Length: 320
Ligand code: SF4
Ligand code: SF4
Image 1: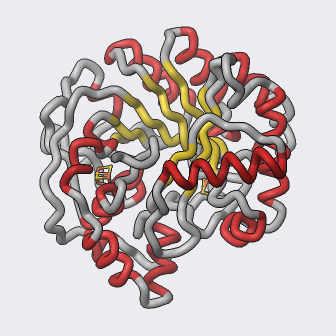
Image 2 (image 1 turned 90 degrees about the vertical axis):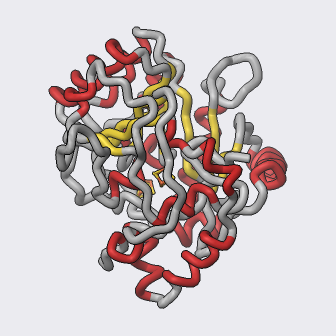
């Protein structure tokens, strides 16, 4: 795979500073039942990296000390990690909002038969990847059979109350472009998703989030292979909007890797750009218990244009 950091590190992206911390986003490991082309963490079935119980306990200690309101759990497929249910239960017991970044197909994997019921019982908010509402596009990006399995999973989640009015069970879908272009306007695309999935499959969901593909990891490497990397960066840079700077997720989020090291965001984690703290090359989450990060500078590079291009992009969808 081609390295993208050398092409991104020299940057004219505007400086950013942290605001009050609201979300702890933890990557519990890179094991996944899928190997999607656009995956920015390079996840797959053969990856062995997994968060340990000791690190998971540090995560809970940090929640207790920081008063962070949201625990956002990502991977890989987070449900495959042995600590996943411990983390969900502990955060739920503390009244912390929990988000599971679910690929949907994992709900049909052996050993995951009761995962959907577990998520509903703990009021976990599900953000599920579905990069298109059409079968051919989903299967092209995520693998043959993924669309049908995703539809079955969404129907099952609906039966449990997810995405239904009045249940409080939030089911958001996440769209990202199939190729090197920006997402269309989120609001209009959400209408298209709701119409097609509702009429064709009887599926309801809460909101659609659009996410810009980052020029890093597998997607960035593919751009380099095809000679499209610089054109894609020109597209992102040309569409930059200063108005999006205030809303980028790194201002209110702390990202933790499977070993407990901290980063300003998941993308920086994948580029191995650790959070700057106490002049150390890298810092563990345990060292930030009791530390106020408000006002600290954020490590930026050219990939940050992926967050500020067009309508903006974050783990919560478009910014504007
Ligand atoms: S499902 Fe998500 S984590 Fe798994 S390979 Fe695809 S993009 Fe990566
Ligand atoms: S890539 Fe990360 S550090 Fe850069 S703007 Fe986006 S969230 Fe912030």
